[in-house]
Image (cartoon, rainbow, N blue to C red; front, top):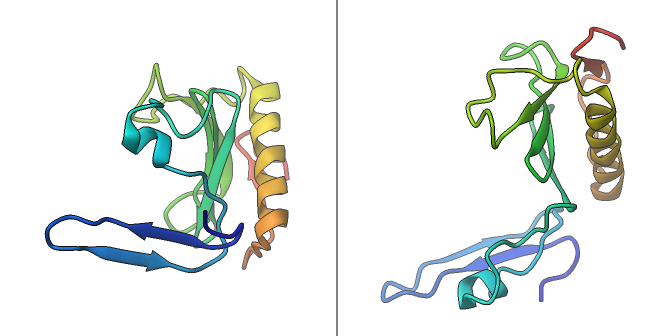
Length: 130
């Protein structure tokens, strides 16, 4: 199994395609899904998150909190239920603030663990509160 801060993905087909990614990331094994003994890598209670160019996201079960930084977004956190709204069109942040808070806190722990540093420290909630 790869180390905690390395991801290695190997796809061995007739063409022997191989991709190696060695950067800070947290991962779980795909072995169970690939062998058919599991239907999902992560359980409903697991937090799964990531970031790219100050954009941030964290999932748990059907819920996803996401913040897209300018110029593509406002840099505010939004909450979506992906089972009911896979296109992420209805922000539930004001209706379910505790769920949003839980996902933001999980993202903060994730960012601390992987050493992520925002280039713009302004983190806003969908309500506009800093």
